Length: 465
Image (cartoon, rainbow, N blue to C red; front, side, top):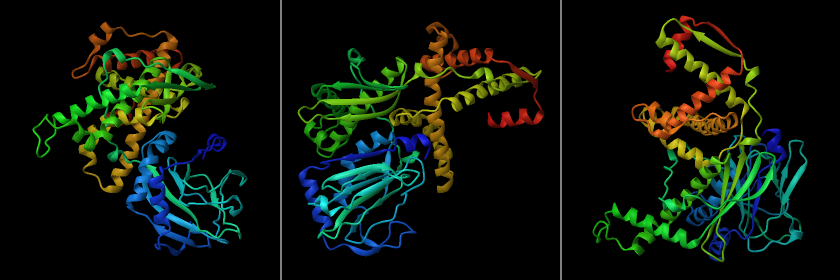
């Protein structure tokens, strides 16, 4: 973990996580005689404890689905479960401090599945900083969960001598969804007249700001209904003619999908609206007030105007030259890439998964045929690289827009229309032309060394192209 991540460790507690029915099912399952003794939390831990494998268990699959959105909002990415099990501790059975996973982007969810727990019974989950000092202790209260970065060192303390019960936690080990498993970002069309959401600034600390917007339950319900009707037009359900499927049948089968599409649309719309005003969304969190059917979105953003100017004057740029016009165009592209690489090094800030997922849809579609030819290991490595490309595109796209605003660089609709390439939309041409002008402006701000390109350098660039 970086010093900044240690300074602000991600440890989030959820109380009263499940409704009573699901909580009762979870407690009943954890009271069943499915336990086995002898499990260890990691290789260096000599003290075994009780363990119950919950792989594929319907009850605890439901638990994860109910908390998943909150975890993904905090992590800023889509997550999947790579392991789920219950661990039981009694007096004398405490764990040693350890990390669940050393990979960036991996998380752990612990759920306390007991009907009763008294303060005198102890058994806290304790978290440590890089120096081994305790930074937080979470009491195992019934129906409570704690979500945290798997790289944070932690330990489950043993229950006290006074405790007559089993300390039960259900552990979910989580990792980012692989690119191939990410669904296309499905959105629902919104009326043109509702293109602007009312955004309220909630807080600001340096370049980080938080905005909030509220969408009425009536609006959500109407758009969900429209989305269900759209889905129904292309369905073939036995017993019903196409396009004539009753709304209650569609709701039963596709209601959750339709609501997710509408909610996702609002998240994307809010993020794009904030970007136009100089704020790049780094995380989104949704809440449903219990007293209404409204949706509240909280968006954490990086306020781009607060970022420093690019130190491009000190960049060591080299323009390779050639007497061949076609080769020179390729070499100029390489210089353009040098500037983008420099910007990528300077501006590093988190991105909302919803924005990255949008970018990945097109990237993954373009690479699908190539990925199909790879082995499983090669495919995983390629997907990591493609995700990095998607994140870079989103981040640099926002930086370029901010620098264009900052330096007064504008592209008119006429310019974009005239510059359109075959198969390119006006918006794509506008973005490409804006990037070219911003990069040209930055190159003009610094001294660029020029020298003839070698044959090997030209060949390498041609192979990359």
